[in-house]
Length: 311
Image 1 (cartoon, rainbow, N blue to C red):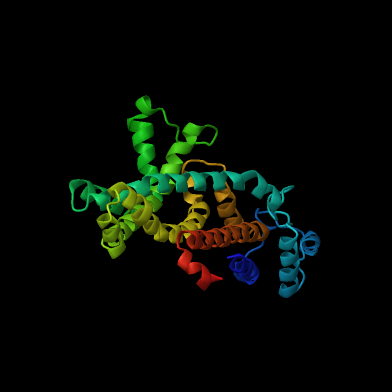
Image 2: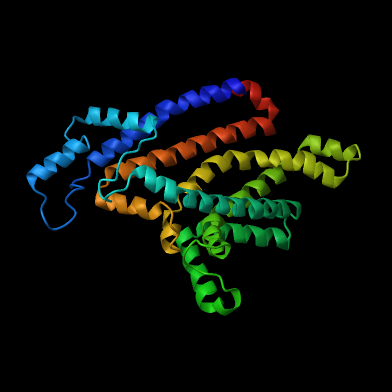
């Protein structure tokens, strides 16, 4: 397992370099100038000085090399549009909020989706099973921005006097409930469907019948054998899903006015703020890579048969 982890860590280096290169080349295709965002033209002398200061007058491969060096030393560069701020400042101030929102949404999806799938599998073809699957299918089909809009409508306009849940900001625990639910409803539905399908298949396995024939209690069989094997596909999907939740919260942040990096990312794309776009993209790619690595480790713990094959 240790050899596998070290090998995966080394493999992350070319992946990150490729992400930087692709993002760098795409940003070069965007027309416009980050220093000319107002109607007043920038003098040519000032324009040349700015390009020289930010290495924009260099060939593209030298710009790429400079940026890779900056990433290696955790120097993501200054913002080309926001005066007096660096990408490091934006990340350190606002990215923890996005991570917090993603973790709350992921925890909501895990805590509600796994038990819902278990109950649906254990009560197969019952009203509980049909109701749980209907709820999960709706949650999987409805986009997060529509869920957010409905939550604001009902909890702010219809039931605001009863619930008292705020729909804007991130200053208290009440502010974090609705954004977490809106972002975590889709993954919750996916977890419920995965657990239900895997448990139904596992309950039909011979080793489960053997354990029951030996006289083991049904709860012990379900908890020790069925549930553990049923969590393997959940863990497999959890890594990319966690990365998706953290990196896909931009719309939810805008709707609920959450002070994360979503608003900076969208603004940076529109303003052609190359350093902010590239810095946030690289950071999000690293999160997805780390999440997949953690999933591989947990997969080996849950299913020891895969350890030899993976190391």
